[in-house]
Length: 169
Image 1 (spheres, rainbow, N blue to C red):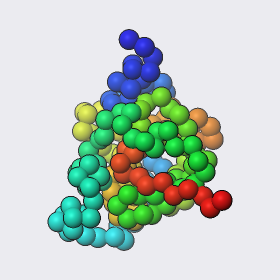
Image 2 (cartoon, helix red, strand yellow):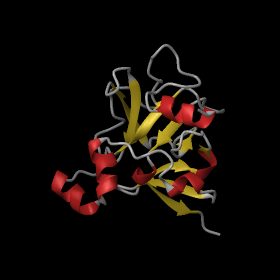
Image 3 (cartoon, rainbow, N blue to C red):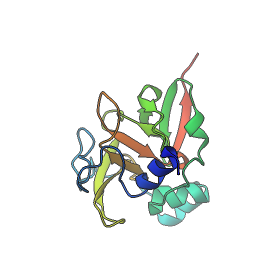
């Protein structure tokens, strides 16, 4: 079993480098765990979301699913630009914050200001910090304490929950 496979497996459970006694990572700057940054500004019925989103994006954004590791083309995206919520097009991350975490999901060390809300997730028994788009409430992924500087955080994002907008040349 190689290191990358081991890290991917452990990341499914919020474990791996930097895991601390099963405690959830602290919330994103400006947000409190368990409290969204603000009420979502984009509100739609479940039927409207299903109509608007492809099935895979709907499952992740609206039902808090997880895509398979290594399945997103955004893992290989290296251009300058901005990563937006696939549900409402809100800007979430700059390409300057993206890094290769080895987990199989697009990872970032710092979100854009006021872009995300957080809550504690107990789906895998151990608490983890889930983060979501502050505008539409769409699930993006989980944040862990094993990222690089400057934040020391790893925002592990589902690629299907993102759209990439390249910077103007």
